[in-house]
Amino acid sequence: MYEFDKIDIRIVNLLLEDGRMSASEIARRIGDISERAVRYRIDRMVEDGVIQITAVVKPEAFGLTIKADIWLEVESDRIMEVAKKLATFDSVTYVACGIGQNDISIQVVSKDTAEVYHFVTEVVRKIPGVRKTTTSIVPVILKDVYQWRVPESATKDSNTEPLTSSD
Image (cartoon, rainbow, N blue to C red; front, top):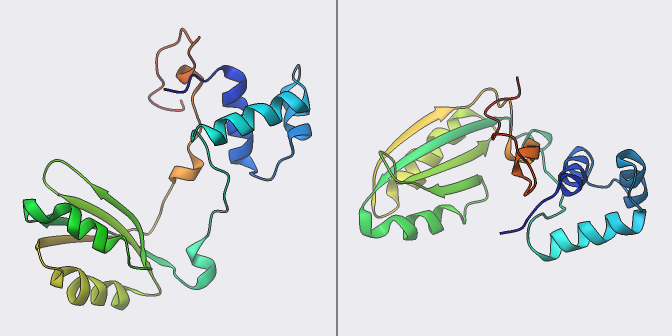
């Protein structure tokens, strides 16, 4: 497991704020660290697979204003097969396998609810192994994965309890 220190966390959170922020700007904003040290830390985190620096696409900019969460109940011996098939569709932005009431969870983007309906009824439900689907339109997302900030409690030298909320 990668061991973060408080400087690593500050670097990551600044990059989350602006993924194109220069190492010199990060060093200036943190203070007491050189640009070279910041570049080294970023390179190390990228190489170790701890972070990746990438563009975040906003589906709304392409007219895909509807998001829907779809939960699937699938025959137990076909869960991975179905999940991999779902991951191939352009409209699917997220695929996860779970333990519990639902076997697979996906999120889709579309231009309207009719497109979601068609995708669920004519595509998802016709994949061999799918038993049941439950769909929910998602009108508001308050926080997405790329907005998550690393809490200081994740550091190896932190003596604080893990945070459960931002209050």
